[in-house]
Length: 319
Image 1 (tube, rainbow, N blue to C red):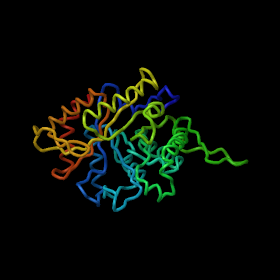
Image 2: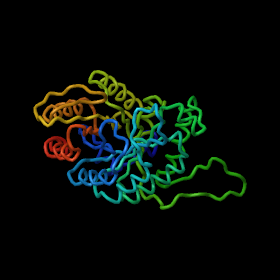
Image 3: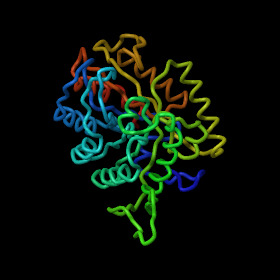
Image 4: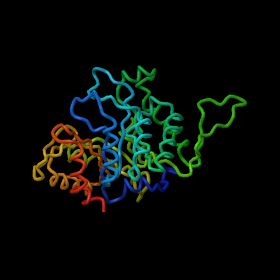
């Protein structure tokens, strides 16, 4: 979130997750097995408490408004604001991040109200990640034109940014004669940081000017280096010498064999913990500031994976 196009507003929680020349590690919820459609969300809350206690830096929550038979993710996701509220009440230190609210399918003032509510409940631990969605049939179900996605994202971002930047300001869609001046409560004392998750149909220069940073999916190392170089050049153009974060969502199938070498899987790796540490060091050295782990628990309980990463991986990076 920016006070102007070139001056980021300091945010303690954003600085805890995204710091120059450092890498932090988070977890994406829910943690499920392949093709699992029914999720025990009480278990997910327990895993969130564990991650908070063990020192992970962030919990990420997705926004999946509608499911369909042709959508590859069968999981029944909770509404993100409901889940974020539960996480805010059940954790103490860990950052909570929406990854990402589908900004084009929600009214930005509703998004702002949800963001301010979670930020208040969590005592300033919320980072507002937003995206544009990528399923044309879902746009149609909400009466939106997918071809207008790019413009709609920018328009909604402007309204949302005004509402979650202290002092908060409501930009109404319409303001007929005699309309009162609206505002959002609770009042914001500090701005809520905003993060672009995916591109939202925007250029990297636009993202570098307006966002705390850019969060992307995992790509193979050469492609990822190219994406970071493109991002770094955009940041230099937007704010020479300034810091903007670069983060990655990475799937992790952690082997019980600590020495198993890493092998590619879709959007991530199957690996033992020692090779995982080496991979994360390379990512940090290549300019990645945060990695959120999409843990697959098909072969091992999720709790075991979280505990092993906390014991043997986090100490390498969370000093």
